Image (cartoon, rainbow, N blue to C red):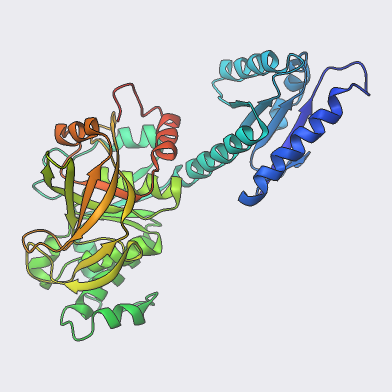
Length: 406
């Protein structure tokens, strides 16, 4: 991906001695960007971002003449020499007065390159989120008494459209009895060999997939228990498969979980696991998380069991890789975010919990307090690795963070 590079200086001497040093500075940044398939290219107006290299003070007047032509976002970089940094602050202030932000980077070539990479990821995620439609199939389950959200606030904060879709419309699609083209069908059939619920679960998958395509959804949540009485089956397999395909889906009509999973996917490209905090052990500073809908691409040794609460349908049991994870959740009021670092140290197979179960050692004892304090509802979202920097920066972009956030 090319990034438009504009170099601005106010030197009266065309042979000024800083030019060679600045050439080397840019070349070294490009060397660092190479592995991320990014490159600073001078004068590329078709690029989707601009890096503005302020080489000297006095460049502000030249910026003012060309700023309307520059691809956004704008990233300012400085060597901190030749009065370039104060010029950057003047330009940033100019943009802020127009209610337009920009990013200011300085330091070593490696530090600036990492800053450019993070900024490009941020705006790529923002473009994925901007104007997205997420479906709410049925209403939130009756027990989610604290997990409702204000649709208008979601629109105002994230420019995400929440689309209400009736359960009856989904049932009409399921009742067509049509199995659409299913990616990795052979693998699913192998896992579900001789499973009496498999065909019905795949019909639910196909029905949801058609709803997703009809409304051009990037994600959805479903009041899944409404399907159990009529079909004696569940949406667990559909959710596991669709999340693997990159279509974010949550169960029980949990909208805050859907928003969290969708923003994680946009910001990191990773699938995530909607889970119940099922047991907390204060002595070992760990917690057991469990659910039946883990994405298939997050687990190995996968087994198709029945759904825990109903004993019907297909609930997914699988082992997650041991190692670092992030536990996170956007609160239903959209004002706070849960961020916790942990490490999966064991997969469990207890009989009296949902099918996929992981024991997570909480990295910071203070974070255990935040988990216990609640306020985020009855689900959390778990993703491999430490994604707090990406998720936090994205939330900061949407003015969704404050000093109390964890």
